[in-house]
Amino acid sequence: MAQPVVFVTRRIPEAGLAPIRVACQVRLWEGNLPAPREVVRCEIAGCDGLVCLLSDTIDADVIAAGDRLRVISQYAVGVDNIDLAAATARGIPVGHTPGVLTEATADLAFALLMAAARRLLPGYENVRAGEWHTWEPLGFLGADVWGATLGVVGLGRIGTAMARRGRGFGMRVLYYSRHRSHLEAELGLEYAALGELLERSDFVSLHVPLTPATDRLIDEAALRRMKPTAVLVNTARGAVVDTAALLRALREEWIAAAALDVTDPEPLPADHPLLEQPNCLVVPHIGSATVSTRERMARMTAENLLAGLQAQRLPYTVNPEVYHG
Ligand code: DGY
Image (cartoon, rainbow, N blue to C red):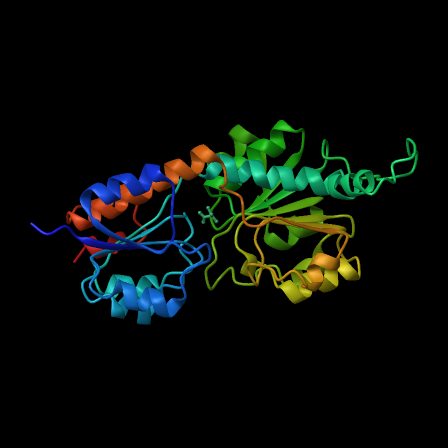
């Protein structure tokens, strides 16, 4: 029997590619940058499966071009780049990689929080520039993390892992989420409405998926509610924050600093004004970038893909409704 044909939009770890290669005829985009949308649209024609990344736009048009498409397997937990309604309307299950990147992403969020609080980057730049002449009684003064208030926006898996870290570091932790958490008492968390959380927190960390409801959730009004000493950490999606408003907030010191793993636009061009802000730290969307996490993500991506190709239920799907009718 002919093997199913699969388009893989970028090289992923061999832990995932190898099992796919055994079972499928693989068309792999070898570029170091994402395949242009038109290339994906052409390649997907005649394919039974698609492995894609958060940097690919898998809209209704692209899905429609996949005349034989039976499964989409995303190498990420977030799927805001995929038109889920279009996939569901075609009965195509969409797989993703929840759970395995929780701790790695929370580690990075906490690293950003600490780096911004204790001004690691200005300190490092000072040393590199040969300007470390003496111990500075008044230099590089940052903010205490211990005893400070952390506001976690979105208490899903990653938000909860961030909250645990905050508690471990002696912080008071507030959270805002669509639903009250059953872990409140166990973890010592306090629920707050978003506005109250923004007003009371010394550090605000974002952990919501990007949806129409969270698009620019942190807008000018939200930023103006934060303390002038507060730090905003974003490891969720860039568009959860209104970039123009954030730029003004940093320039005009409505808040003290931002530490971002994700941006809008993404990637952030090297001449973007955010990068001229000394109170803004940006890293290139590396929340899940540990060797073992990326390997686990790759394995899950393969498991989802192969299950879909065998007409089995995907182990991790975002549109289970495709199985209900
Ligand atoms: C995801 O999986 O959605 C992260 O943003 C990247 O690993």
